[in-house]
Length: 85
Image 1 (tube, rainbow, N blue to C red):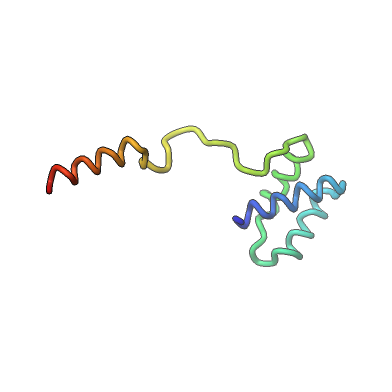
Image 2: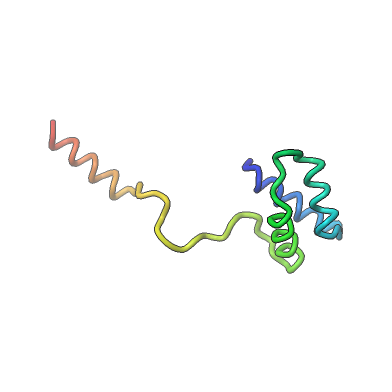
């Protein structure tokens, strides 16, 4: 599991236990040591879960996709490769 995603689950758990943001970050530091997310990120997620957010994954981002690999592009490349043989 991705480092930050695992920690978001931990933050969500702490919110359910009614731990405040400072206590939550201290627990993250103890559990994850040098691999702990930043205090500001911890606070951001703590606030979001406290306000009712359920999903731990990031929201989809707008803008250009990070990849151009689509079925259509794969088919185009295959066609080009076939035509060169």
